[in-house]
Image (cartoon, rainbow, N blue to C red; front, side):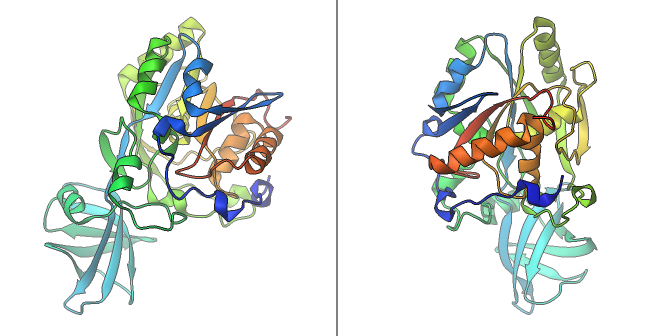
Length: 344
């Protein structure tokens, strides 16, 4: 398949600029093999089955955008931290009015950082203070480029999941934004187990696919961790004949990266650049909760691989017609894995 196979027309007014008034008050499109159902998101608790395992990504979004200037020239710079390498080192995207070379000194409020090298589109920088402390004090939340307002206090609350605990992402695992404590309690009361993985979403998630031939595209690498207790929870679900339900494409990619042919997963940590397109054989995940994604994106390819190309096209056409809200602050879908997505 080619990039143009994953395009669709989306009215600009359907791109959500703010979250719903309540987290679980957003909408949920249940995509079944032969039908679609329009539901409130909180109905998810009744769609899960006793014994199911819900797997969520507990990454926490950093205040990763820094606005400052070069010293001593005063030229404006913008730094988007991609990942923290160690206490004072980071890898980042950098925007400046003029080319920036190793040795350049950048000032961000009371902190400074020295550019130490370049690696493709990223720069390595060394701060004079711990990176996390600088970001918390001087940084801004890096909202996606299709959200037009600057991040404010409301975004700092709502662009994090209620279970975020492992700092390191520059974008939220947005399917998790729909869950509040009451819904999580209801899901547990229904006999569903909840487990966690960590995948730190990187800045590359916003990079467009430029190759029409998908075989030419290379995914950016992202750090993940799948702990032993989550691997054990997957094993219990498999023994019970229950489903593994991923909350978000990041949880799915983590599970599939660590997945085995027998449907289990290995506890592991590392980097993943798994690129899922139609024809991929899923090993672990049986159902997926996910938001509506950008046209021509790797995530459109992933959901098409998971639920079937024609089924996804039908669901997206329905979502546009019914005025669902799209992208990070938008509504969600519940997808069942299609046994043969290419044939479907």
